[in-house]
Image 1: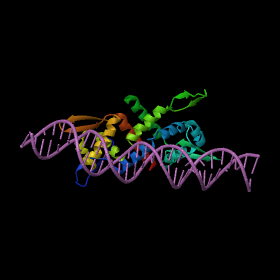
Image 2 (image 1 turned 45 degrees about the vertical axis):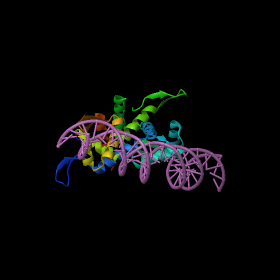
Image 3 (image 1 turned 90 degrees about the vertical axis):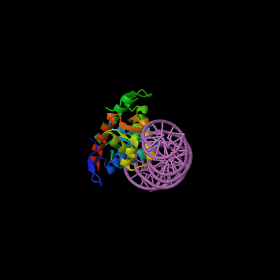
Length: 111
Length: 111
DNA sequence: TTGACAAATGAATAAATGCTCATATATTCA
DNA sequence: TGAATATATGAGCATTTATTCATTTGTCAA
């Protein structure tokens, strides 16, 4: 069962979602809802990579990558480590890798 | 390992993503990247529900719900069954429920 | 047939999003 | 110090997205 059963004002028990939880889930999924961020995550899932290396690997501007990394930072999906002029990013949540695996299963069985 | 290793033009083996796969993953996640759709999915994960009942449960207009259901239909996330004037929707993929579970784990450990 | 109900859809609009460009900040090295 | 490199960030712009409103389609019941 995904959702807890709550009791509405009508005093009628019904199976329902938690509105705030729905918002948080949507927020998490929207962090993954962009091909550039998916590519970034796929790379930093294996090892930590600094920004300009990510730019080279993805063939995108530093600004674009930094903006996307900010999204991932804000949502606590990545952690980073500063070393000199470099900032190394790495995936900070095993759940994200699991989500990717599940999503890969879906697109394999769908397409 | 999430991604297959491919060989680039430089003939240097490197760990990389599949660009098309990244796009498909992003597409899937964006289907879940909205609170209304998350709420719909949470409801029809348990049992099939017709459109106007969804509207009542979510307190939203029929048009808004139908538009969102179209997104879920197009991405093959839901299946539906017509019965008289009603159309009953139901979740059509176990992977989606698994994704939700994983995502719930994430937000529990993050917030 | 007519009217009521259920659902889908197209156009319009406001808000969010992803990128570029320019610039700011910070660190290293000569 | 000054130049070069690495990263972050704000503004602007084009595109996408979620909703509303109006309309259409389809089914049931009188």
